Length: 255
Image (cartoon, rainbow, N blue to C red):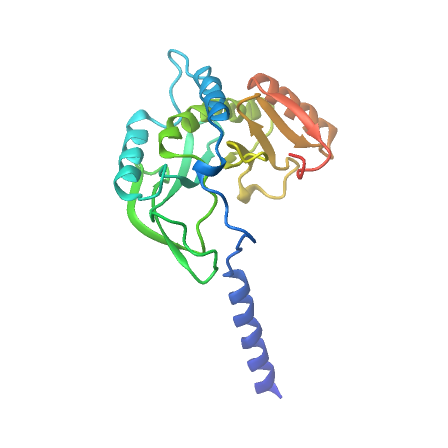
């Protein structure tokens, strides 16, 4: 009986391991940048981002890093537009950059939309321990290609948008919202460009601030209503100080 229990326990552990390693596969393959992106929307991103670039204001991502990442993607990605599949950053409470992680698709065409596949990527990562990012020229990750977020030529726009998010991090600290924020690029609801998902980094859970969505074109920050009135007031102040317009939404499906 004891032996059977051990076998059953081992089987459950194996099954759990398989489930946790499972790759979520979209029902239909995401569209390519060429099919989805709207030039006017990207131009509006660029115009809004340039407003953040002011004399004497240090960039979040140094120009030398941007140049290195662009050169890497240009040399090692065969995909049209050299699309980023992932672009995540984590801030320090003072607004400094704690970490960065970016992935770019390498193959000329999308890999099959199958969890059993792997697809080639090149990438850049920064862990706060060195003075420049680490470049991975040829890597691979589980599952099919992820969403194509932006092209390598749009990387400077994305990095300039981080200046406003850094202001939000600094405003959080000033208003006693004691979180370090992580921000990641996601596809905009209309699919024509990108927006940012911002939240307290995972190790700070539980917390009273839920996922925020930042729209650089309009300068809007969307949040569901917070349970604690004091936190809601502080979030409103922080958003205003960062130059963002906070809008409450019924749920995050509405973003």
